Image (tube, rainbow, N blue to C red; front, top):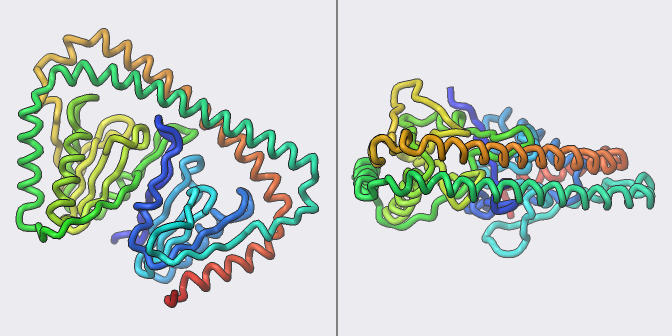
Length: 363
């Protein structure tokens, strides 16, 4: 039985700072409901309740998780209704542009300002400063890790046969797309399947690919052409009019980690650490870019140098994760102040208003 829910991220803590894909993820919706207000006043809880209610009615729901707390939601889409609901603060949603009708719900009205003293406001502002600093340190560590990763890639990049890589790409384009083209160019939908979190890397690869008939696991090394292969496949799919979901790397969003072709019931993804999986059912196969494109013995030739780089990279990634953990703790403190001052009877009334607008097909 296929579950009536899909899980994604559309916000990431990356080597390029905070990175959003909500504009693409929420494309082609008829209506977007934006929940505005500070943290801790129940927005994520309401998103979860609305998602559960829709699923209880048999409707498919797309859940967009928080990279700071993956068990919490930053947004949802009611697929059949073509309605999205998003936490305006978590998504930094822009009200300008886009074809969808956009409606705001101000949850800030549920705050009892008498519960937030001048002293408390001062503490919140101080904590916000600390939160910005913790995030900046995390992004700084990720950026350093990316530079180290680039060093790592060079050893393999210089040993790569680009002709063979191009041949693999063309073979896949022909195998996957022949007979499925409609030659009306499409625009891929851009998402994250995972995120860097305070507890390390987290992903939804298994749940996203579970309903598909075919899964291609790309193996290889840094610099062995995995992301380039995916970029070329995505570009060819868009040109040939084949629907594609384009999944960016949660560490370096300029790289791609997975493509899903819904109508082809196929996924092809980078199956190396920190999202390493192996075939475990019919329809699974491995594409090893190291074996097919690299000079034999590359691993052994540069073993000592690569080991030293891997150690430096690991240290920086752990450092970044510790800064995210600090950010999560600070964010929790900020939320607690707002939660204590929230009138949840007003929040419940707002939830009913959001639910009514969600189920109302008129725009």
